[in-house]
Image (spheres, rainbow, N blue to C red):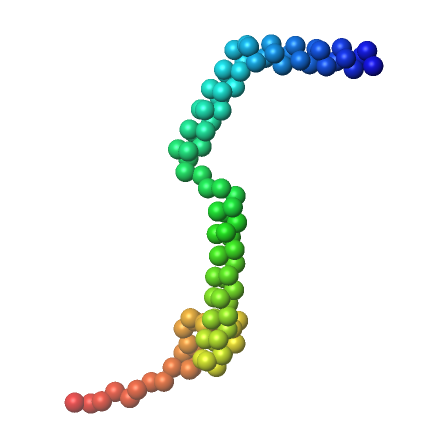
Length: 100
């Protein structure tokens, strides 16, 4: 019981001392400086970030659906890739030259 009372008194004295010391002013100045630095950085809130993340997920889902639909309309599979390789010499048709 006595120990608890002593602890409360010491705690109260420390709080009073800190409140009256320059440490409180330093804390206010640091918070002010950090606040202005964060404002200049053009940061966004976590809420704004989460909203944009959800928009991106919806957009990606819609894009995948549209790609699948386009592939179906074109008659190909959505994973089909177009090759851009030159044909072999045997596959190239030759046109006979015309004589003037």
